[in-house]
Image 1 (cartoon, helix red, strand yellow):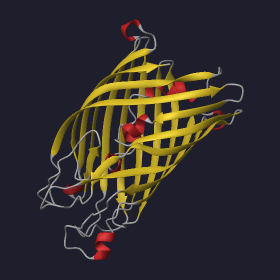
Image 2 (cartoon, helix red, strand yellow):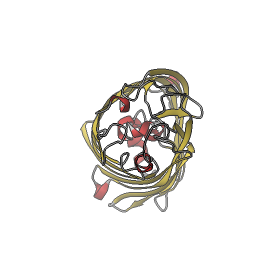
Image 3 (cartoon, helix red, strand yellow):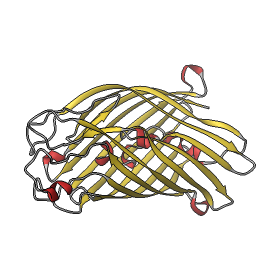
Length: 336
């Protein structure tokens, strides 16, 4: 799916604006969170991601194992939610929702978790992640003699977090997931040995670490830097890889508007040669995203309009592994 090519930090999108609001646990008990709905047009190319059950993103046909994928256009409804309940007397908060950074990489994972304030040491959290809407990938991405069939891919696991580490603007996150495809047929259409086909297996474990530090530049500006390490320990050695990346996020807020800008650069380093090409398919990733919020929409204090543009590319040693995305989105966010 898309997260194979673009990491979570790459597509952290509009909710960055609200991160400062929801990081601190409220001092009063009760409900809070946000609901988001909108429309988006996506120009996307990939030889591995099919889409979701609701939306097809890439072509089922490819005519070569050595060419970049064709670009497809799609238009779809987008939605997201984050609902929380706080027990103020104990500094405890229950969280349910699909994370914005996951949803925007077509990983519709839900999280059910708990956050706990620990004196001046910060806020610790633990969440169970499960696939509310499994994404779809091509069962055999390398098939060229017929239309490729799609298969569901789910990724369930646990996420541990430590926000405001020792009362600083540092946040640390660890995530472990088990990735599972309903049907894994990579390389079945090719003249590969059993061992070579096994090396393309995409089932396995994903471990990721992220550290983010936020600087307040002025009263209305913030800059956040993040470092990301992600390891795909998959059953197929040729698909096992490590991602190393960095992201800068800048936010500028006024009474009526907020602008959030993201810049990401990273690399995917594969463990072994891909038997189809007899080389490693190492990849460079870059992306830029700008989101604009209009607060107090229609005179409603809790309602904001949003418009966002995203561009990203993944450039591999082999053109077949390349991927690009351009997305234009509009919508509304309701905070409560």
